[in-house]
Amino acid sequence: MRALFEKVKRLHKRCNWSFIFGVGFFIAVIISLTKSTFWISDWLVEHQDAQLKKLTVLGQPYYSSEQEIISAIKRVDLSSYFELDVKAVQQSVMSLPWVASVSVRKQWPDQLHVYVVEHQPVAIWNSDLLLNEEGEVFQAPNESLTNKLPQLYGPEGSETEAWHTFLQLKAMLEVNQFHLVSLALSERFAWQLWLDNGMRLNLGREEKAKRVQRFIDVYPQMQRPEGALIDAIDLRYDTGLAVSWKYPQVEAQQNKSKA
Image (cartoon, rainbow, N blue to C red; front, side, top):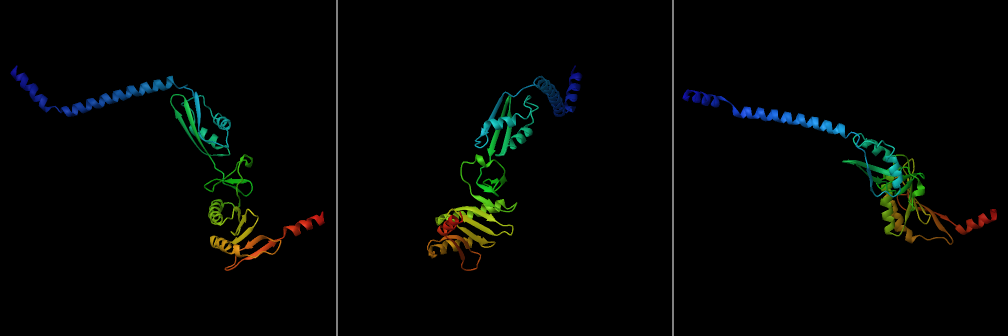
């Protein structure tokens, strides 16, 4: 009996119990994961027809109605929670003219959240397009606008530069009680400005801010002929400027005589 006990003791010492325990733990994990996989698979099969029951539109859309957004979402198949194509929903809502970005998220078990951000129009571009706050062009119906926006004109691709230039020069002029309402950039990249009193400033291609400052400095000292209003001021000279005048009363009389 003592000999058997000694034999078992020697066998126990030779065994690598850490290794055996590790292998046993690994096998247990594999079995557990296999069971979990089968359980998840069965659960997905059982719930594959789960339907969306609640749709929430988030954000603060102003120009796009909630009904327009919902109609765009419903152009996508919403019959299955799992099979719903989130990207397709996003693209469908993005097709609305005023929408700038869309975020779509599913929430278990039956909800869909759609967050909508609209373009904020800041200017009209080339008469029929719009610019947003980043100077990006987009197309949307102008009749939806509630405020009068500045008019900007320029070649394709110059939208951002035109908008940033407008902001810079508008700030300079407003400090001196002038109100900029329109700006145009020609194909040769020459700049023209229009003030709210109808006055046009021709700046040319270079030193835009410097030439606007010259106008601001000289304008209070200008002598006006009787009955005349300034039509345009040419500031393309290195020094000085040239003024074109208009005579509204004379023009009105001429129009009467022609009638």
